[in-house]
Length: 220
Length: 220
DNA sequence: ATTTTATTTTAGACACCCCTAAAATCAAAC
DNA sequence: GTTTGATTTTAGGGGTGTCTAAAATAAAAT
Ligand SMILES: [Mn+2]
Ligand SMILES: [Mn+2]
Ligand SMILES: [Mn+2]
Ligand SMILES: [Mn+2]
View: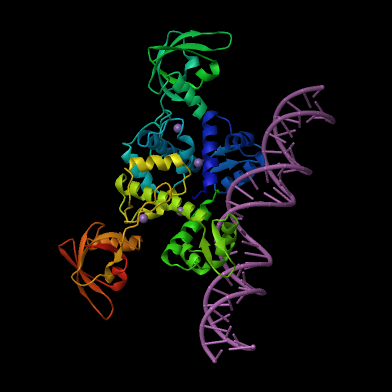
């Protein structure tokens, strides 16, 4: 099955939205994710459905098929490998890679990806801590907890961010919260869920629940 | 001026054809180069003309404008830098890079190209010996002579190939004629222009005029 | 059960890029 | 100068992907 660039982008979005919840994905959600209008989404859903990468009942939302998931994971794999390349080899900051990877992920060349993977030494995670699927689409999932759900006095290690936007990543840089940093929950405010944490054993940071929910850690 | 991928490809083709001769470029030549139909070319010429990257009088062929040349050279620069990357870093053979570079050259990111250039140590030539324009579009031209135009007993060094097709490059590999190899003209057949050469001071190779015309050398 | 509201789909339109077939134009031969 | 032949353009149409406005449908409220 050959997909166009637009189809690949839609399918990847549908895959990501599918992973978030267990229910089928709505037209509006896809439109929001893709920054297009629902009418455009309906049109695309018909095409993706014809190519049998999604299953689709009008008005009742979308489910990705096994074939569709496999294709989406290939795109995710390419996206994340390119992100690693940009950061590790070309010295991009982790908040500068997303847009470029969004283009690079559509280059069609199995050899290229195979060689890139080898060149990068078969990385397992991208610069944002997200797992890189292998060539068969298998993902090594790590248990990850948003730090606002950790208990006071618990320690852990930051392994990923949920939000990879440049704005959020720059905030992470600002407070010294990099992937791999140790964190300890010092205090939680019951009222609004905000937390105070110790980052990297040296810096106290106070953050809202919304921010904390985007920082994922393994507890230790 | 923003060009679509198709427009970039056409403009690059027009640039290459312009460099070959001094006359303006014909619709048919562009169609042949782009492997499309003349009707499609006419359509595209109208668009490129509106964007003022070519000057175009109906029925009288095309000339590239200074602005168009600058844009074409940016695409050429990206194409050749990616080719170097593929060969030097990802161990592609020089006959495997063209198709992939044809896609990679359209990635939009000035930072990416600047970093790639630095990462590759500011290469001056691509794997086929073609010069890489700098960021301002300046090209360092080398004097290059097709080896069928060299005299008997003259020596030189292969610096480029005119034809970069996989088939021709594999022939080059087969006869041991790599970029940088020394060559000496041993004999020329008046009748059909074919030549016998000594490659790399060790291998005698007999080739047709057509083949020899695609191997470019500096005389020494 | 009916009305209201939110969501989703369809209709119609436009930009892009390609095609075939037909018409227009240029250049060469007579 | 007129005819002929090659080249080029235009006309018309198909596929992709987007949009706005209107219609259809589902879900929620009464
Ligand atoms: Mn993308
Ligand atoms: Mn990422
Ligand atoms: Mn290209
Ligand atoms: Mn080249």
